[in-house]
Length: 140
Image 1 (cartoon, rainbow, N blue to C red):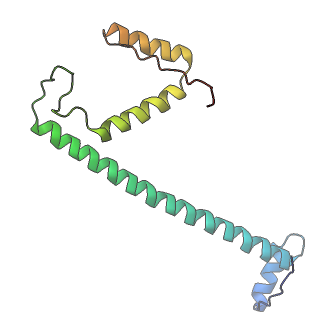
Image 2: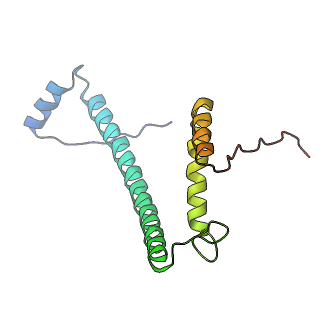
Image 3: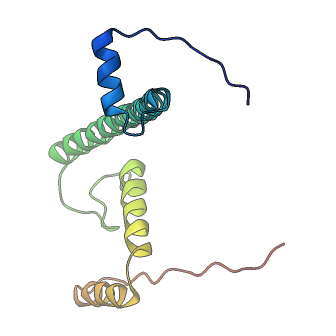
């Protein structure tokens, strides 16, 4: 890579200060390292800011969904029908997708013993235990 040279002017006081802080006396190297470190930090901050914006949008969506579900629960009778659903059309797809994702992530990060204990609690509540299906490794 070809290097380009830049000229930067400093006052006498600034020049003396740079000589003091550049431990090995390499003022040019000190300035370059400092600027590049700051540049990396700036890029990281921009990336973090973008991620925060995404998280805010996600939180708005979740909050809107929860508000919507809260309105549905508050306006509908709470007696379950024969399928156990409290809504005439069943559980809303948005809620089912969110719960399923949370359950799968939790299950993936749980030990077999934790899963067995949870299944025991489900059995104790006289509910059916979901044991999951293993994927077949066949290729077609």
